[in-house]
Length: 465
Image (cartoon, rainbow, N blue to C red; front, side):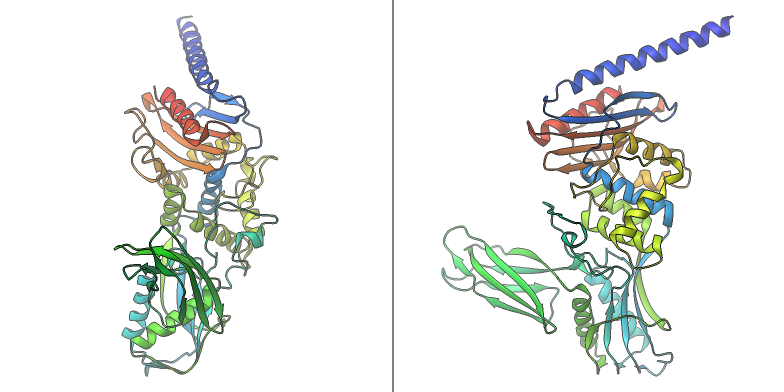
């Protein structure tokens, strides 16, 4: 009898506790403007009890919370140790004498973090192998993805507010170069400039001048006949410090081939052929490569909400899932089918990209909650996924969010921001080591982003108590 009474009182206490927190959260939600559409799902991961749930099955714009599905699907399908590489190979089977009697191929497999320093490392390795001459061409191959480099090409009617560099399987410096201007000369004189990384195949037509009043240079870039022609108009106010701008490369593989050829030649390696694009033959010998593993990549994506890296991973998912070239169709199928057996995806879910910057993405907070709960119970996925999330008051997009001592370091999550949209999802460690799964999406017309993010933070504070 005593045991039955104890269980009864425990149940009553839990119900009253849940009722109390439910009411406190509702009072916070009631402060939202009437025009704000909201969806909230909160669950105790330890007991699976639903703490608060309102409009959780409503179709919402998730913004960068979409990245949770992209990175989770990648972990589930590929595994944390999966490598995304940039490889240099040759079709010459015997180059022991230092001469490659054939072509040199640079093949991209979605290594979106590749930079100039990595290319310099590869060139140094080729030199150290003893290669002193290449009789064929330098061929860049980005066929691991499709040729639709811009989101406007692969998403019908897309007019995203956030523009990205070209998304390709062969990447260097996020497929951008930097042009820096100095306006230290006399008023009316032309701006001085420099290009990074340095190369000889970029021509600059400088029409921009030093001005007395505030002005801005206008930059146009066109790839033609193996050269990049940059036209600069407008002006820049006279100042001591330099101003730098990024310029997107609209033909990433050709740029890569040209830059690789130039760097090899600067190392004293003679090259007979041309720099061009093409397909790597099946039978090749690998000379060297640089890779990044998925564990590192998803941390870069989730903590800092990196849209470019997310879109590259999205297409890599498509390539891995299909065994064919990576494209948005296969990528979407990979994400939607990854957790199909666990019924995480619902009918209100539509995934069109990997980053969440498209307003055509729709997801429910209940679906996000099911995803986070599924990963929480998965010993293989949870540690790597949890570590990839931003930590409140510590790093990433949550570093500068206002927090109290209850929340600092105790919330691992993913933010999401678009015009008129704020989202927050993740894991909160509360008192007695309770872990709460939280997903909040707010679509607003009044009071702005700061006000709505403050609502999200107040909900976290109430739960942390």
